[in-house]
Image (cartoon, rainbow, N blue to C red; front, top):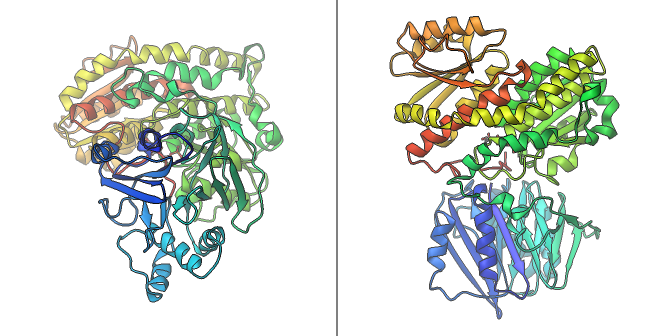
Length: 610
Ligand code: AGP
């Protein structure tokens, strides 16, 4: 949701904070602020809008110092404006903090504090925390005790970084539900919501767990629980490098990440395919291998794009492993009390590894005593650390809020899982080998599909002013239709719906006229003839059809308005290729409409609150 960064050391803090904020801007970007403590004085500068607006505000403002905290916001409580921007302070201004998460009981706490004479200046839940700490501190506890006592009063989620005049050589940090990483340096230390904000300065990090605090100084750091038990933390190395989080000459992270997919799909499979035996091996599942292979039912739970990848997983796991699969939105799964048996398997899919609903669904499944495996992109993320075992999809940092390369790598990883399980059941070595052989052609075929970019751009020019779109697909291409519609919605703000093509007759067909663009994924698979009839139904109502077809298939040329030819592959792998022109279509329409592709309105890259 929001991005936090902090530094204490001997360098000028402002450039470090501003650089960190820019790398975290994909997490939230409706307002931002910094607080710098220098020679006992704390300076707070905050601005509504993007980091660039804060930078303008800071220009000509001789703010400097050797320690400070900063924040980029995605509003939950209190509209985005300068007052509600972080950092927030207590009455005296001596306690300053930034927060990522939601203080669920802030109203009750606020009422209690007002009754004790506190005055509030913002509409945020966060300001309550600063006042609460000062309330405990005024009651004579040490500053650290006041910090921990306040945290014990809070219901909800938080990643907090706080500085105070009372202890000018320390930054206090705390985590519960929202990610927080400590960066370990020489004579300097950092705190951040994720490692991308500090990788330019250190690759040594420690990940805070829920219920842990860290007190960092120039010399080092102390980690303990809120209840004052010291915790020894292992320093880990950040696995990716700075280049991977830069734009590499592309105008947007999203377009760069779309074009990275030949490599990222290859990375998802690297070292995991054994062609001669026609099998896949996923080392991260070793601790739970028996339960994965012998699961009598599989639940897949996730949100957004990851949920759509899960739907593709359902089709292939049921078709090739003959195991019943249920795919659930994590936000429903966590509350609907699903019937989970001991011999079931729950697969949680997530790019960020921090999505609150998916994390809660994981914990609910563990509470029910079943095995939980993860398909995760961000190494060391909360969900990766809390599953019983899992597989990293190795897509590298995904900065664009609209998920693209994570989807194709998730589907590739689900295919590896399917192959691994199916080869212990009815799938023959020969069938396994042919799937492995075909998987190895994917990077080349994805690269081929990317060559439709110019064709797609022309189509985007034609349809950029439309207000509604319909996406249709059958079988493995049905989740692709959902994902294509989601991409268009989230970055171009055009209303779009994905549907199983045959379902159209049961309602959506009423929407079709010459003003309704209909995107149909019509590759030559077992449902081809059926999807052609669906296209004829649309054309009979003057709908404008953009069809994603198999290379060399000119049968539809005369029937549809536009065709986008892509390479054919096996049915279970087709979504990895079919989605490419749909990602490009959404991208080009959004650019032509002047939308902020990398930071679409109202969205954030990782949704860490409910
Ligand atoms: C997709 O483009 C969106 N950013 C969003 O739907 C996302 O897929 C969803 O929030 C899940 O995120 P996760 O994969 O990081 O858990």
